[in-house]
Length: 110
Ligand code: SF4
Image (cartoon, rainbow, N blue to C red; front, side):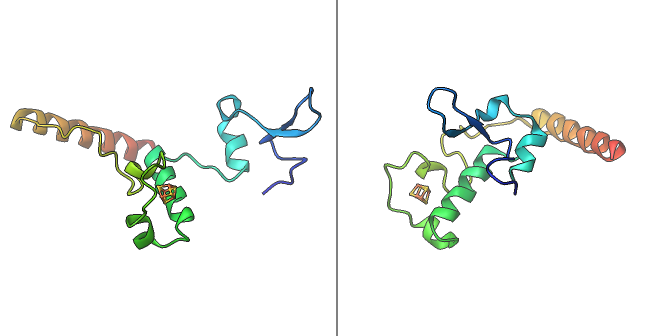
């Protein structure tokens, strides 16, 4: 990891003359990677934060009592608010075909 002076994660606040974190929306993937952040699904990032908060113990994350924490519903790495989708046999077959095509395209691109 780069030093605070060289890291692209920080800028000098011109009004307060202190270093502050940059807005990640204005950073490139390369800049984020140099700070140790790879492309990550949001739920995986939440899960990682909860594991960190629980001292790395998945059982403690599972048993977290801090219900008022904004991450609590998502701490198992899933979104419980997402409606379960009912699919017909035709929709399931079409989805499987799309997935197979996407996997084949990804395999040929590598
Ligand atoms: S839900 Fe909040 S308090 Fe509980 S483990 Fe995750 S970050 Fe920590």
